[in-house]
Image (tube, rainbow, N blue to C red):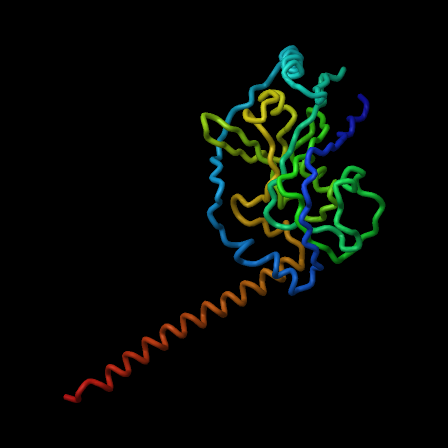
Length: 270
């Protein structure tokens, strides 16, 4: 058996929106602007109440895959076709919408990548310790050319590489979004799920199914995904909040103690 084919990624752009860069160096004070207990530790209700949902994805035979690809290609109005390979796998395009709220980090020795820079992909670079934070283009839409065996975590890594983002990929998650009967449903993909297979099963309709890249905010905080400066900054924030909380408690009981003592002095003896 020959070596497995290396998954290839190609990216096209359907968004020309401004990136809204907010460039900052990762000094201690500037880290606090981005990584605070309010934005990173406290769970706040979301405005868009996407409902999580689970749905089954049936296994298809080779004949069913071939039929599905023919049906898929017959429904699209672009040249983003799916192609069946001799080994039984297939290639095609998936569209991913970026809905990131917080800034991302890139090496500070490089300027924030423009859309043209991201098309060309990362060039030669040297390792750097300092980083610059900026906002990715809001609601930018990316098309990735992937294999049927490409996993969700590989899609996330490919998107981050295109923007030279050095944040841990585990900080992000790929979601499957669907609109049904006027309701929006959202499901987080596991690392090993195959987005192109899901695209084939759902068909080309974006209402039936689309992909969204978001911050990985569900469940417990994954502290291993943060860098050393970020973790130290969290500790400083927690210490300040603890000190402020203790100060308020001591002030409250001191006030109560004072009022009780005043009441005792006001009581006549006997």
